[in-house]
Length: 193
Length: 165
View (cartoon, rainbow over the protein chains, first blue to last red):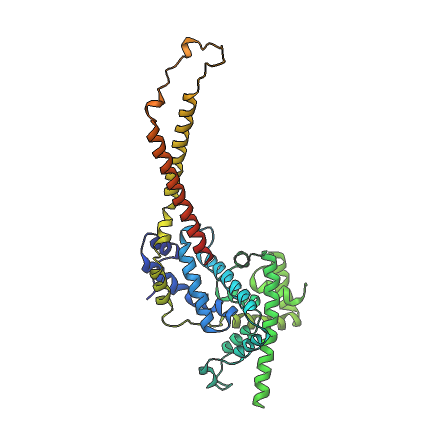
């Protein structure tokens, strides 16, 4: 069962030497941090590594958290920076053949999904599928806006850009997501026919 | 980039000023094109908001905490009192350096080459600092300073390396 204490109270307890308070913080934010990491890494193993790395980095610099923003905003900025570094490294390490592989990874869903037929697939599944096909920045903005409880200003802080730029990017990301969603659904319908 | 869609997204997000909000609400009510588009975007918005977050493996938080424990992760807790430690060390250096400066000035022969007479009323008795700073004491102090300096440099470089990793 997760703690009902606020993030700030848990941080204070952690700084006071109570490590289980930090475990509660991890449990509280792990799903979102992992999802955000997945927007960049595509593979679950890499995403878990990024997410784990972020929580360790956050723990190391917890005492430098000024509480001028929400803890989640501060944590997501660590996730964003770490994930961007991961992407940069991967671009350096891989050739164009690997890029094709990453596309295949997007198409090949975890085994559980294969058993579903189109009638059973929920709309949410299609949205997640379409988000995975977006560029990392687009997917990140949409995820932070809808699931991270972050305002445009907070997203701007995380990504190190202007709030107005975030607004424009969010608008374009939604358009691309809508197009992807329509294309995927059309494809499924054609397959059925 | 001032399309109907953009205006409607602003309306849905609550990002437009009150006047514009009212105007768009009117348009949705009266204009069929706006109403249709608004309903479509609103449905999309609800679906985006209902998307599910992915779940990491069961052992995720355990792995994080184990890594922290393995890394002797009490370091950041020490860092919580770092400011006081740093202030203490800084004040120690400031005090000792000012003591050295006082000692240096006290060793200067002020009357040499200067015929100015200090009025008797101002002729205060300055304690003879030489009594406090004998040769070996100063050497020991400088040695201590050197060790402390090296210790802080080592600490700083370690933290820098850890941050890079």
